Image (cartoon, rainbow, N blue to C red; front, side):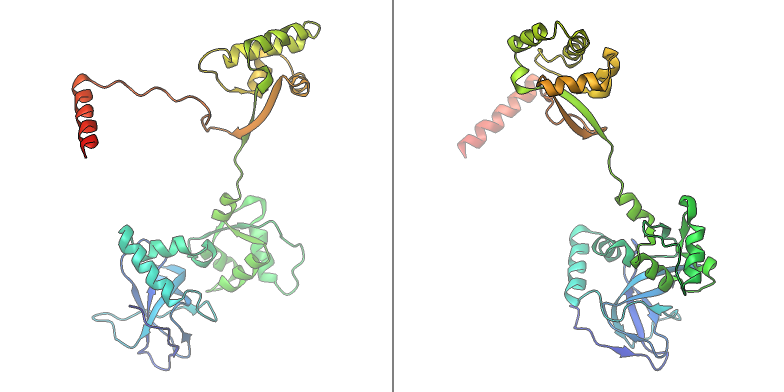
Length: 310
C-alpha cells in the first residue's frame, strides 16, 4: 500500500528517492536527493541510467532515508515538476495493472503518461509546425531549430550538445509548448492513412434489368458505355461474389478519364466511396469454413448432444 505523499527537502546526503523508470525493467531504482532539492512522490525527475544515458521521465514512487545496501546511490540530476503529476492512487493502480498483465511498472507508466512526459537522452526531436523566425532572447532555441531544418532529427542528448547545456530539457520543453518542437513519435501519430476512391453501382442499378436499361440509355454516349462495360467485367457485379473496383483501376482499364466516371456518378449509375488503402473490403463475403473430417464431425455432434442434455 502506498502512503500519502510527504514532502522531503534534502539537507544531507541521506535522503533517497525510489523511482520508476520509463523502461521495461523490473523493480524500482534508488537515487540520492541532492541537498536543497524538494521532492514529493509523484514528481518526475531526471536521472542517469547506464553509461552516459539520461532519463527525463522517471517518476518518484517514494522518498525515504534508508541507505541502499552495498552500493552508492547516484544523485538525481534535476526535479522536473513543481508539484506531483501522479497521485498515490494512480501509483497503486499501476502496480495492480503490472501484476495482472505480468509486465513491469515501467511499461505501465509508459502507456499511462503522454510521450512528452517520459523523455530520455535517446528521445528523437523534429521541428514542429509553429516555428517562428524570430525568437528574441532565445538564441539557444534558434540554434537548435536551425539544426532541425529540412527534416533533420536530433536526440535529446544531441540537443544538449548543440545548446551547450547539461540539461537541455527546459529549452526543449519551452519549444514544445510553443509548437516549435515535436517528438518524432508525435509526428508519426499525426500521419494520415492514404485513402483510395472506389466505384460501385447505385442501389437502383444493381439488378440485371436495371443494368440492361442503362446499356440502352448510354448507346449515344460510347465513352460512358465503355466504362460501364469494363466496370461490369471488373466488378463481376452479376455474380455471387462481386469485387470492389478502385476508380483509378477502372479509368486505366477502360482507357477513359476520371471526368467520364464522375459523369456516370452524377447520372446516378455509380456511387463513389473511399476506403483506406491496403485494408480488405469489409463487405466482401468471407470464404466458407472448411469441411470437417468424419471423425471430427462425430466429435462435434457428441459435444452438441452433451450441451443439449445439460
